[in-house]
Amino acid sequence: MAAAIPTIAEAARQIAAKELSPVELTKACLDRVHKLDNELHAFIHLTEERALAEARAAEALIMARGPSGPLHGIPIGLKDIVDTKGIPTTCQSKLLQDNVPDADATCATRLANAGTVLIGKLTTHEFADGGPSFDLPWPPARNPWNTEHFTAGSSSGTGAAVASGMILCGIGTDTGGSIRGPAALCGIAGLKPTYGLVSRAGVAPAAFSLDHIGPMAWTAEDCAIMLQALAGHDPKDPASADRPIPDYRAALGGGIKGARIGVIHHFHETDNKVGHDTQRGISAAIETLRGLGAEIREVQLSPLQDWHACGTLISITERAAAYEEWSTTRLHDFGERMRSRMMLSAFVSGVDYVQAVRRRRELRAELKAAMADLDLVVTAVQPNEAPKIDAVPRWDTFQPPGFMMPFNVAGYPAMSVCAGFAANGLPVAVQLVGKPFQETTVLRIADAFEKATPFRDKRPPIV
Amino acid sequence: MPSRITDEAFEFLIARAGLSLSDAEKAELKDVCDGIAAMAARVRQPRGRMAEPALTYGFAEEDL
Image (cartoon, rainbow over all chains, first blue to last red):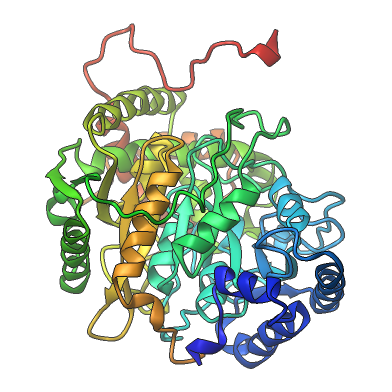
């Protein structure tokens, strides 16, 4: 029942009022895991005893002194490329199936310090790439809206677990859309922050200069709560930004009247034309934003294919460098999809890589100029609702270009929010993109949109 | 459409990357590798020798 799954904001309010026990909340999440995860495969590793111990400790502290913040006693999950001290961290790969890190990733530490309760480690595509794969030690996650369908990835388990209420929020990572893609297909909210805002330290790399860590939750408000705990300088990440962190949740509310929003129509209407239901969701979202007082304009950028080529060449090359030792000695211990990606690196020369990085500078400059007098741009997240899980092309690198990679190339903050449901009942989504370090704007507009639409009232039927 | 890469060049690139592939994997890869060449062509723009890559950087305070 949808009403039985609170958002973080609702749960935090009830916990502070002593109307909700973190232990009971954790048990409810674990009950859903036991009921649903045989079908959804969202978890690789459950930390049930630890979760209950953490929930009891949180409850004792809250009863004595009140909650330390809105995440105190909140059940979460971590994508299994996030290092966790003493807990297996496999990257969903045979290569690391016995790996137990001796330290936590910074994002894991920060969420633990905020008082969260770790339910377990979540399914991913192998090393956050490729997928869905059926030849790995663990099965791929399935979409809770229809288990015959794909979750997208690579933060596949996080998408499935949040949508089905097995956790209230989780960590995703995003190199070319791996937060926003599963958020879209699973009908939740997912924010890829500005590059450098959230530390990558202790998270397995997919492509160093494109990797982002970020929140996935049911609502934009919950993403704001989570981002507050995650954001901030970390000397262990050489790309970490050292700048003041605003109050993300305080930025919500107050309306969006006068917000200047650009729509990149050609991305989703010409460069890679989206399906009917997705287009309907995007058009309705734009009208909703207009109705809330936003000023809507047209934006023109280089073709999506240019952004895709730039990001793909960088991604293939940086991944191959990170995993070169294994690709030359244990190539066939990777699953077929990850192996395919690794093989492609043989055809990218050093000069190709540098030309891609030079193109990156030009594309970033272009986006900066296009957004000079805008607060936000809008486009699609996915071309359609979720495909069948057995119908995802193996060489998807060469499929029509995706809508998310441009904002990994640029490093700009980008968010997927649910924009309704297709005729088959599966979610569709819209992507909201802000200027660097303007997550407050992205979250404020996303929150206003969610509150003006009914899509947060409906959970997957399986729940 | 047949791949534009010659067998010799293909074998050289695979060997240089240190990849040990089966014949089936090579055949499949040869079918798709032109896609990478198309992407590489797309990022080449008439930009002249002075255009900097995105990863050039200045020294931050912590580097000094």
